[in-house]
Length: 274
Image (cartoon, rainbow, N blue to C red):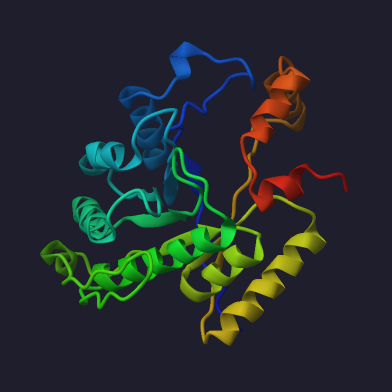
């Protein structure tokens, strides 16, 4: 009998002003700050979680890379999943920045690739994912200690790998998610872990089968991550009460406004009638 695949449990650091006691009711005490977010990370580290997502935004919260650098040496085992938006930074400098973070974390870092539009940008899906693919390839090359040969539309430069990359043992795992055809093709070619969202069992199984097939066509295999919000209490009754409290003050119009902020295929599918 083959050994079971390893299972990793991760938590979420609320870097983007996304911590609420009740959805839709902002609480100034829960806004993203170094102390509040560091408390979340240190608690998850102490409780034995394998990893913790450091999300990336622009208008809200605090910067992902700067915060991760600040807490790097005060954690012991947890692996930060550092979200970076492709196109925000010159690719070689992003590689140098991530290599430095990986060094500060003693090789404990994971990179979550984000393909959304940049602040103030309007870019169609196809070129946006083409940019993402080039950035992922550039990061894998440079963080692997190899020379980037250039020639791309989005990453055209030829440049040597930064020296610090040679000290961290290669490129950290690249996590990536998206349900559009463009996103799935990028993941099949370059992701190490394909991230998914909650859905019915048949729908999740269909995505798994599709992504395994796509990756196989490139001679690759994928691991899979499943992101879900959970409400945990000592008893089911307490958990249901807590879940009810979480949404009790949410005005329907506010909920629609929150959903309308995202136009990704994943969110549109999650919000569509069954």
